[in-house]
Length: 250
Length: 250
Image (tube, rainbow over all chains, first blue to last red; front, top):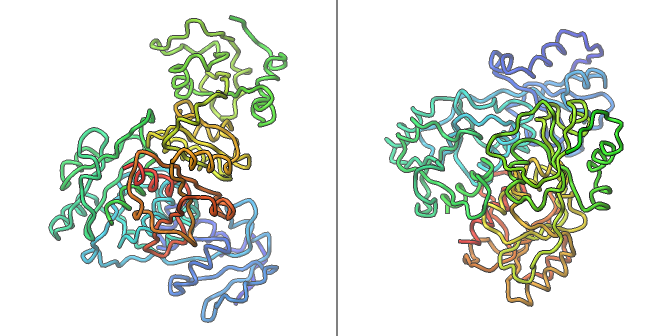
């Protein structure tokens, strides 16, 4: 265990850089903070590279931190690496996971270009709740290791595998594996309740303003829409995802 | 049409006060801003008491503002009354509606103590999309005329009647009218798919952290829960509302 007092310590500078997507991609790691998120991460200790604890914090007695690397830091250091107004005194650096058995997935969410961190976080939480095997997100989607996404995921970022990759390739892969792929579209497609629930399906959702890319919609098994009965123009993308996932999984 | 140049004009001070719940309740009016929201409000012109237009703005040609009171203001005045960083140059003062034929409602959403403005706005948008007849919200729920709620509702605040009142009274009223009332609860109740879709139902949702008040859950026809298949502890309240409304309405 080391102890870091100065906000100018090179390690502190390094940790702060993890607020940028560039640094997260270069190192394959990301920073989380707060009691709840660190507690969720502790359930899969092998992910945690370093626990960062403010020296005035008393760790919850039920936490088991045996075997973990720990840095004790001053309140000032914790404040410097935090992006919240009232840091809770604990943070961690986690390893992204890279190897996922995509070929075995039977219930999959594909994300094409979702931009809002709060939306993506809520979608991750919803996909976890709905028991999805994993998610594949396009390059253009907001980085899931962005701190706002992690916060809105309420810890689900640690529960469900997320892979960045080509949505087009994913569509072919799952169709070849006899997993039907459903796009979502306001213009074309069938009301979602026409598709029966199943234990094998892949749902594709798209950008908040523009929906799923038109070329991708050509590649799907079928495209679905959620009927609008009132005067709203559309549903929020997270709400739409919840309605569709809970219908499709039965 | 009058023209207001100074941010110290008493009218400007009056308009700014509408950012407080107290003033909105005292006057029965609220302030909206931005092209999209004002355009939605124009669909029900009788609600608009005053249109406030920045003098450098050219109104969209398809807007019909005949018969409306208009104040032209300087950019500085618009900035003073706005709570966004980049005001779009148009705002309006609207009348809250107070008389709603609750007794005739057959598809109703009851809101007990939802606190987050973004959640309430999304819920209003979702209830509108699902074709609900109206919403009844508890005194403890965030004010629906709060500007953040209005923004996240994406205009649906103008489409669906919202009444503030006692949830307990509402439960009795609808049960007496033979409209079944469903509470939502993680602890007790039945999986929501056990209830068949119907054109008559009342759904009650609750606070983000604590759910629906326990005493209210005693009064319902039945209480429902949404199964969690993964490791998430719960669903976001807006997502849960979407899943339940779209299931119940069939």
